Image 1 (cartoon, rainbow, N blue to C red):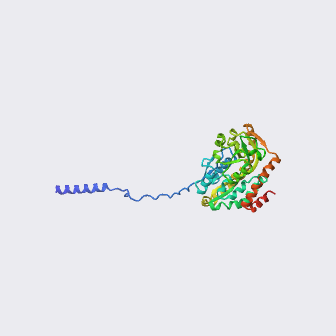
Image 2 (cartoon, helix red, strand yellow; image 1 turned 60 degrees about the vertical axis):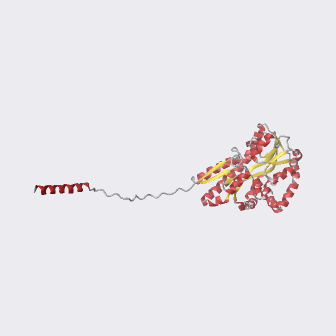
Length: 348
């Protein structure tokens, strides 16, 4: 009997231990809780903007204003990176970079576009516009539209023409008052057939050279002189290596704000509008007025810096124009009379 009682006691203890080991907690599950879906942020659009002049120019100030506008209006969805001072190469190199979309916007001289279509040389013909405002009207009007059509086949789009000042001549030989004063002078010119022809007709020895090499070329005597607007001459410190500056104003010089067409077309409509509006407001309209005022002010600065500056009489300006008549006739035959007729509408 005692044995039976002991066995029953052991059985009760075993059952109690088993019950005590059970848990009221739910069994673990292998399922993971569902994650809250998150939006992937849109990739920021980067716009690289390149030009060849210094940070002290109207061109760069306009580029800074464009950057601020685009980044603010796009609420940070677009970032503008600026590359001044020829950091990414000369006019030709940055234009090619835009065609390849390694740079999205460049601001070269219109002269560089002659590498894509010779007709752009029309804008660099001496005394082609009666004044700067006539040039602006033509480029904002039918002339500009016809020229812009020439950019499409090479994948470029134009956001508008800005201003690079009235080009005048500096050198280390003598003041230039009339064409005969240029005889024998080695003049640096842009790598453009129009500028090479111009100085041949005027009796100088034109030497094509990239802008980034000009200061050293003047310093070392590779060339005797160059021709650029007062603001650019001052910003580039050419007064350190040039003695004479003659206000010939032989060419109203323009810049072109080119953008890669595929890049632009891939932007949203809102982004396209921001880029176009910013370019028109700052790279074109504000830059033009700033450049005009800058060139007026910097003539005095060049004199203060030690350059001998001379103005050209109306009689001598006519001598330059007369010497260049054969050149105009040459390009009328090459480009076609209709282009000159179109320009003449804006010179009235």
